[in-house]
Length: 58
Image 1: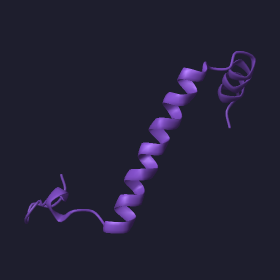
Image 2 (image 1 turned 120 degrees about the horizontal axis):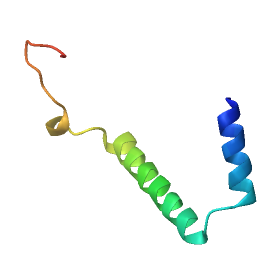
Image 3 (image 1 turned 90 degrees about the horizontal axis):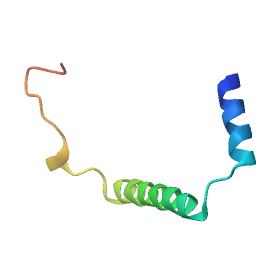
Image 4 (image 1 turned 90 degrees about the vertical axis):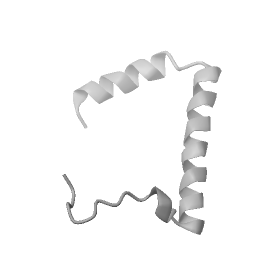
């Protein structure tokens, strides 16, 4: 871990974010977990998988 991140954590501990910011981040994390759970349960839809044919990845 670089010293930059340690200084950033120190500043965050001295001036914590507002409850509104914390709630926003928790909502984003919850949405990510819901999407991951849906993918784990039902799998990724074939219609959303890109097909490149014989060209391969570019």
